[in-house]
Length: 150
Image (cartoon, rainbow, N blue to C red; front, side, top):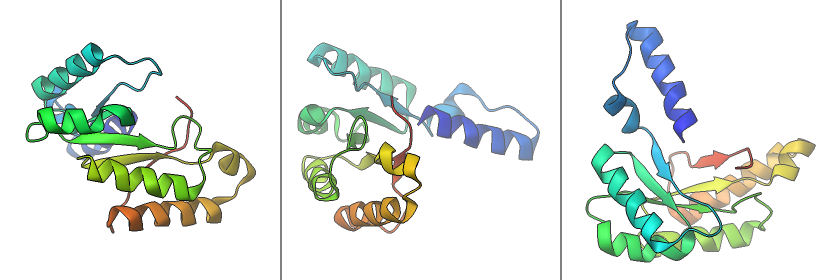
């Protein structure tokens, strides 16, 4: 997400021929902690940093979404990553993960696409999967899709 924010920064900076402040960049970035052994204290610190820096969202492992949403929901946009880390989950699993994330209080999802499909050039399959997740989320706007391993 930081890379997307930096791309946006470069687009805006090029158009306006000026730099953006740290604050202007951070409102487009998600603060993320997705390591396999994340602990509650680390998640709490992540959330406090996200609030302090006014990031667009905080992206956390599935097991923390409900707790974080309950604790910080009005101060923080919670994001859950689905299909993490390599996107190998079947589409139906990603659809379930999406519905569960939203039911638990997430305001957005980041979806990891099947990296094997990317490598094979199966882009119509990837598009169908993204559409299924968008439908599950009840959204028409784009969903962040992750095309690289963490």
